[in-house]
Length: 132
View 1 (spheres, rainbow, N blue to C red):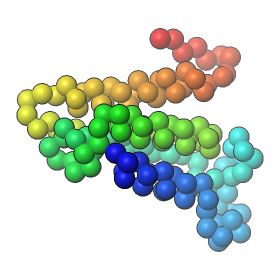
View 2 (view 1 turned 30 degrees about the vertical axis):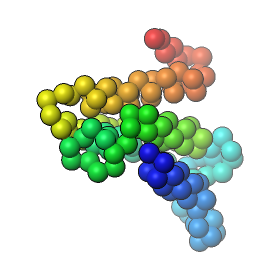
View 3 (view 1 turned 90 degrees about the horizontal axis):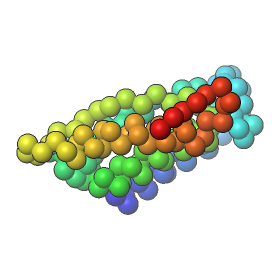
């Protein structure tokens, strides 16, 4: 889990710290300021939340534990919230080694349950009611 999550952390951080050229080019800053007052160079995040990274997956080679996949998801949800940018989450992957689909289905369900929990914690709009 550690190598995958450190790599993800590195690249999410890179997106937060654009190159000098990007900082000089104000034409790429087309979104409204985020919670920190800065403008990211994009206005939508697409998260293809594949679970073929699981160690139980027969095609994936990342060998993440279920906890590692949950940590990955949380890192992406936190990144989106920090930037105050909409996030689109899609399913992907998940191929069991045998007939037991349980770990794959649990990982898919967890992606969306975590998203729901994240929204419940971070969405402070009074007109929105998220219920359990």
